Length: 414
Image (tube, rainbow, N blue to C red):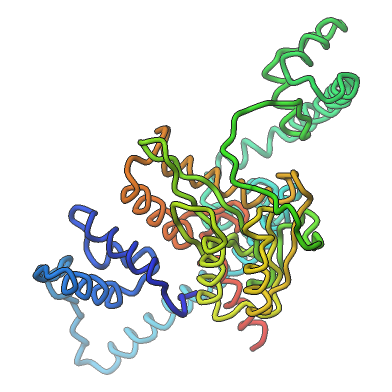
């Protein structure tokens, strides 16, 4: 869905991305979710403000050319041509209707929480009586021969699953005996001492699958600073980061963006729980309340208002401040907070931030200078909404997932 309004920070970041990208065109940058004419006006206004002459319009290609066949002068032949065209359009409509039905079922199928998400092969297998296997594989972009190979191995997989369940029970027992301190290396050693022939890789895999973890200590940059005297805010999510409709439940958090000189920029985001779309964000070199307030205000502009929604966060001082509480009251947003010191109560947001930094840093230790950091993160955030396929959305982008949801509602209403 298009943004209702744009903040000055958003405009400045969009112009900076355009100006700093070699060979960029208004179309290529506008594909991130900005109307190309709007982006052009921002760039021209910025150049006029800086006293820089306007470049020739970039990305202007030759006028599109179309080739049209010449209709026959024979009336009977023209009727046959029209009938053939109608048949072609009807076949295309039937194909699109089938794909729509498959994707509608797939969106529900893949978006019911991590514990219920199944593989695309499983979806094909469950719906092979309703649709052709060939069509299902085409729509879900899976290889048909790979599906049949997967299907042939069901019994072997079931046997391995039963073996893993028995192993998981023994691992839980050892983990409990250690007071939750043992990770996969020590658990493996304990199992081998009990005459079980098992290697560490398998133990680690089973522990990941069944969410069995040991105590791990690691250095982290602290972005959650609890308010020393917060007003009591209930946890209305209770670790349920899903929503039946867009605009009902939002979650937010702050993360750090490392720079080359040892300093940090800080990113505050607001995500919609329905599609995981980033509806609001702000980047600054401080962690004051203004940072999270600007992100929430951007979300309000994106959605055209937040009235009646719930916003979930951790117990950071920024989210617990009176100023932020006042902003939520002004926007008619109900606040929700997880338990103090529990990262799992805001796990979905933290997972998003981890993926964002992994995909933008790509193995580097820092982003370099602040301008480069802003450009890379801004580009990735807009790309994430418009292009990046998300597993929680049935491998659609957040924008496409919401578009199909609204289209399905209109179809049902009609």
